[in-house]
Amino acid sequence: AQKVTQAQTEISVVEKEDVTLDCVYETRDTTYYLFWYKQPPSGELVFLIRRNSFDEQNEISGRYSWNFQKSTSSFNFTITASQVVDSAVYFCALSEALNDYKLSFGAGTTVTVRA
Amino acid sequence: DAMVIQNPRYQVTQFGKPVTLSCSQTLNHNVMYWYQQKSSQAPKLLFHYYDKDFNNEADTPDNFQSRRPNTSFCFLDIRSPGLGDAAMYLCATSDGTLRANVLTFGAGSRLTVL
Image 1: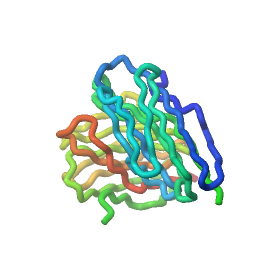
Image 2: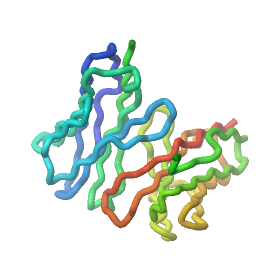
Image 3: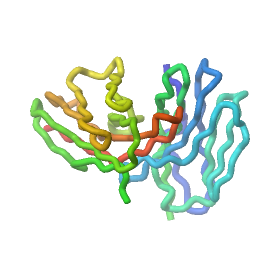
């Protein structure tokens, strides 16, 4: 069963538009962690954020913000005022105590920002 | 400043010809992972080392093997590559003393099988 669902396959926007990436997860665990990684065309996965299941405080970091809602099992990610350099594949991932904290990735959302 | 280095970045092999991909790290992390990522798909964990302890995923084919001669290096051996093994292979490391710690990835090795 898919533990992490990223329903959006591709998103294309014009520079300066906001982009919100959806992530829905499934777990029986009470202790778990959620991540977002970015994979630019160069191929290297870059860590963006980690949240644990006990911390629902939303976070803003520069142009990035995250909305974690346990009630809906969602961990959405927003890029404000997008730039061409934001073009990449974004992966949401889940790490559960029951699965020895191994990462389960979603299928990824490809974001294309056009100038 | 590259911390996880994979070589080669691009590898072309023939059907059935063994291939070895390498990964080295300067982070002194005790955990090293190998992921397979096929086109437009999520990375899939093949196996990982916790120090010298090898942990294979249940669905990883026997065709895939790994070696970790020391803390800094880890190798992925594909004994008889098939067309279905064409993919990006990603190496990652983490500090295993911290649970659910962040993984640091290399840039990947893209394997083409002719």
